[in-house]
Length: 145
Image (cartoon, rainbow, N blue to C red; front, side):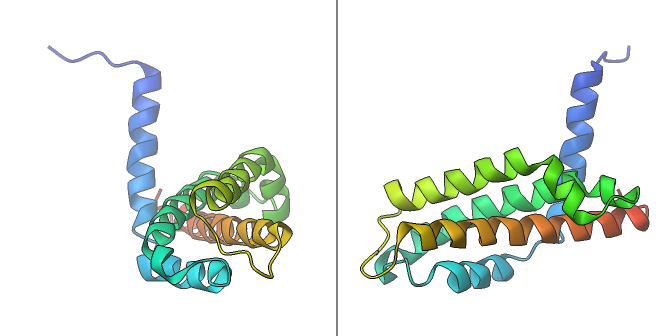
C-alpha cells in the first residue's frame, strides 16, 4: 500500500530538497571572508570562532530567504521589489544578528557605536539575501529548481 502524505508534508519535502540544492551554491570561505569584512572591528580575537559560527547560521538563513524569493525575479520582478516583499523577514534576521552581537557576542565597542554594528548587520544579511536571490533566479532560468 502507498503511504498517504498531506500536501503540507509534500510541500515541506520539496522545500527541503530545494534548500539542499541551493546550499551547494554557498561557499563557507565566502561567509568567513564576509564575516571578517563586516565584523572584524567589533570582534575580540579570542571570540572570533564563536562569532563566526553564528554568522554562518545567519548567512545561511539570509541566503535561503533570498533564494525563496528568487522565483519572483524569474517572473520579471526587479530585485528591489522582491526585497520589499520580504522586508519583515529580512529585518527579523538583522535584529536577531544585532541582538546576538550585543547580548551574547560580547563585542568590543571601544570607539565604535551600536549604530555602526547595526548597519554592519544590515549589510551582512542583505549581501547574503542578494546572493541567494541572484543564484536562485539563475537556477530558475536554467530550470534547475
